[in-house]
Length: 77
View (tube, rainbow, N blue to C red):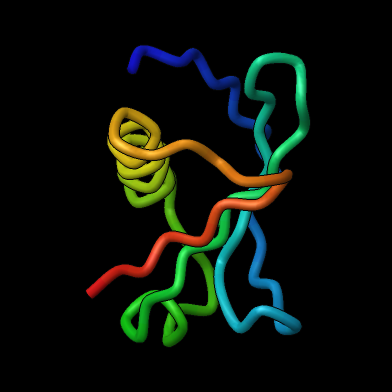
């Protein structure tokens, strides 16, 4: 599947979900992407290189999966 997603520049740690997250726009719908990772949770901030990696991970996830609702939860090892 080739879906275009526009990422917002709002990467933050979401303590409620215990994961880093940012939002994006997919087919006109605002979605929140959560990254569940023990390594990422240890970081106090994320640099732009890692942010671009997370965007790429999201794009790869979308090639194989359909979002349900307005949230995507990506489990990372």
